[in-house]
Amino acid sequence: MPKVKAKAKRVENVCSVVDNSRTHSVVCDLPLPAGGTDAGPTALELALMALADCGVTIFSDVCKKSNIDPGKVVVTVEAEKSPDSPVLTGVTMKVNVSSKARKELLNAAWRRTEANCPVISIFKDPIPVKVELELNSE
Picture 1 (cartoon, rainbow, N blue to C red):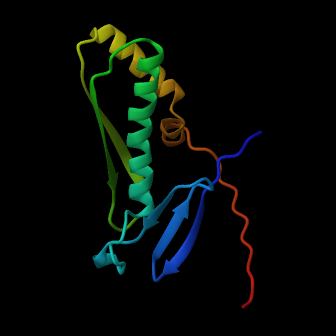
Picture 2: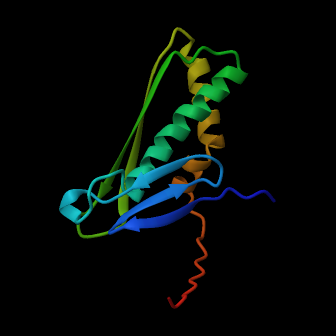
């Protein structure tokens, strides 16, 4: 089965560069109050950004394959998180579509989007994560 890969490397302090093993990379960092330099989004923000983008991308693709003009599509994701806990307590995905297409077609396209968006799936039905820690002496 083909694998989707990502790799993060520490640059300095709490700043890292994450790549997708193709040609794309993103700098991640913590904000200034948390001890970072705010050089990029945090990993959690990046996960929420991925959720928003997956919604836009899959919806646009579903519409294209269905000959529906999606018009303007904006997906906003908001997460609830206690400041003293790493766990999200809720995520809201707001989808704003401005299109001349019939509402029934757009609703059906969004239902197919939810069924086919891998990032929505990860948030709705988390998958187990296997961690293999390898320690090397320098």
